[in-house]
Length: 289
Image 1 (cartoon, helix red, strand yellow):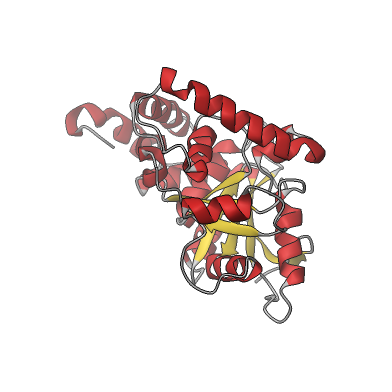
Image 2: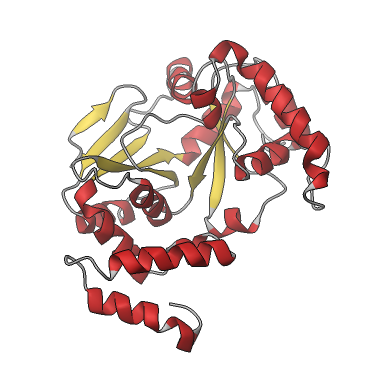
């Protein structure tokens, strides 16, 4: 049962003692939700939130976008259309440039993987977190905030430019760029995008909850917390389900990083190390674990 309510954005907090309990909770969430895993109980914030003062956000965003557009062709041939700024932001996000986009996934277990993997080593007393937000409410309320009752979707390039390239209002909307990469597809990824970068993600979200009278839910979703001591148990359990770097990050880098995870798992006394080592050694024979 939920133990508390996060007053910032009205989500129910569920504190789990073990990975098995957390897994049951995540798989038991019913409805249409979007998930995000974080290595600690940090606020929900974008890279732009973390790296740029709010009064400079719009100017910084415009400069980063134009600079990236001007030089991207020097490094990659397959690029979004010039007026498709959402797809450009997605590409920038993929390569680590600060944007107002925040990465989410349709899969609770993929979110749990990122939460466990990103938990800082040596902090067993700190909890890692999986957020779950009501996707249908976000989509419907964002459109209502923008005065849209039907098509086009907010991800449409012209519509996106109208409502996100300026100071239209404080809200958060799910968006999916037309131009996607293999990693985003493998991770079942989508973005939540703030309407106004002059305030951070949580401010935009809580403002949207306040502004839409009569449709504000008692809870927008859940925040599931898991002890840091359960990190390897989570990674080991997810590896058994085929969720790891090798599958979520297509390419040689993802596979190479997955071998490091396997090596750590097979030396952890709390796990079935024999199974993990066999999984690692079977790679040559079967081509994948």
